[in-house]
Image (cartoon, rainbow, N blue to C red; front, side, top):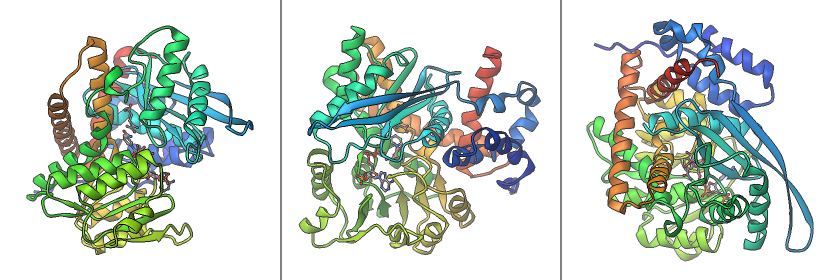
Length: 463
Ligand code: NDP
Ligand code: 2IT
């Protein structure tokens, strides 16, 4: 018997009530409003079944960040020019643990984007089963084309203000777009110097100075583990699948590696300048080339085609209204670049091209309309807050190892990561079916993530 109920529409009176509150307060934060809408759309049956959430105004409270800091980041370029960027840290919710979430350095960063990311992080972190609250931060600084010295000076200036707001029991940042091992190193060095402490204040550290093995791999690996769980539940497996991957940074690279290990074949990658299609498959040797290209030489993905003639490169056309990467016929898709990279036209193209499974490595890569199109066409859709939770989950394992002053082996961390992704998958399906949204991972992730945080907020009173 199909017990599913029609998903409430984004414009339902229930959803509108909450969006109206936000639109009045923050009319210029479209990404934040989008992230809120995507969650609230799942919660009507939850609030109906647990009226004390309404009496305690839990959802209204949850929509307001506990704190936001914004600060000036002055630094000097190699040619002596004085530069000024803006830094932020959003501490959105600490009901179940210290704020936890990445730092993004990208010219598009603003408060709307960081509030959307921090809001998503609350539910994602709750789903991991680890004791971590939701936060995010970053800057409109663009590391692209900057020397190591410039990046170091920027990171030192950024941390010279950020240090007073973070701490291993208060708020523990990590990487995100534009922030990888290099930036975490410079940020940590400055924190250590200013505070005269060596603590687990940041995750994503190198294993030689307190980092967890497998943290760099964890987000991409986790997104593929989640996809494997979805495929198994649907009666299949990833083996033999042709896969579309977007981005070519941390998440995309390790998604490709795990796909290869599980017998699937990645055939696309991208960066903000363009995308490559390699019908012969991106094998381990080609992936090594991409890693060296992006992580060491910090080059552009177009170079892949100079080296591998089986591939073609197409420049990004921002006015095209759709991204042709998503039109390539395939079985599965792993959007791993940025928010809103799959619009409704792209979603239709994915369905037409044969894609049956989408696992979101990026945060909010699929617009709400595109998500509806995919789900209505029967595509299994793993939402970012569940599918890409492996990264922050291993960050929480890094915090655990740091506080015990010991280090787990790669095998131990991988075992934990697999179990966590398995559990998130199961919890999403469970929550979805017990609130009438059978087999819909989006609602399941929102509801399961919400309930744990909401209960903690009720327990802790009006704080
Ligand atoms: P990286 O900086 O390592 O790589 C980002 C990739 O996406 C690059 O290829 C970049 O291209 C491309 N990209 C970034 N912004 C845009 C844009 N506006 N348009 C087109 N392409 C773009 O970041 P990550 O791999 O760490 O992050 C990718 C996604 O995964 C993000 O959504 C992030 O929030 C999410 N995520 C990351 C986690 C992590 O542990 N790192 C954990 C969970 C989610 P270019 O080189 O041209 O900038
Ligand atoms: O979006 C994310 O989950 C991350 N960028 C990782 C956050 C973390 O604290 O590891």
